[in-house]
Image (tube, rainbow, N blue to C red; front, top):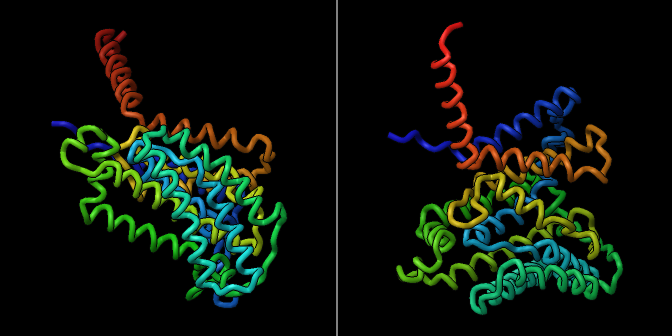
Length: 337
């Protein structure tokens, strides 16, 4: 009888716990949370708030990777939607129109990627690379290559506000994660996505609309990136088309893969993605606390991701088990000296 497979969330959780312990030893106030004017403040709260945008992008990326694809354009979509928000708010337009336009821009971007990948058969890395490059230029064009600053308390509340003492942004993200998890696991949609990612040809022969499912994944990813762009603009009260969303696609892919989603498609974990995104954000905070120079900051991040990925690898675990059994057998044959 085969042993039950380990949860894909196990190793990311252990990595997150190790980082928290390291920070707690280095800085005794790391886990301290204070209540000031009815609001919670502290490093853990900051990690949740700052990691909200990465979690949003990673959520959409989870579905795309689960279908066997990848979306490199999410960082540019974040820049586009942030630019749209800034221009509209500076022009005096309503909050509802601004949010609708921003999310609409994300959906249009996702639809463009879905069309290229699902309908025209363009390789995902090529199709999304087009928007990754062109989208950044489009964002610059929208803001006329300037950093647009705006003031709108209602819009800023989305990223910097509090509800019952808790920050709004993590609550919004948690609600979206829960809704997505229920939609994927309480309906057949999650099984359809896994089937398409595992074997697209077989899923088509089984009667699944593989192209529509893949297009939906890219549209959902674009919408998530659009919402992340809204939070990014609201957080700094400005739109920086050059810096907004920079390297966010890499952090999102890291969070998804570390969280247990198969990069080849098929198996995915929404909970694992959330843990992976928190792991990435905690690692970033850890490097700041330890005084790691920004120039070499990506190196520890890459090492951690390689380590967690190797621990999750079935082949690596099988090889380690075989090596342990071989050493145990050799020690038994050698006998007592």
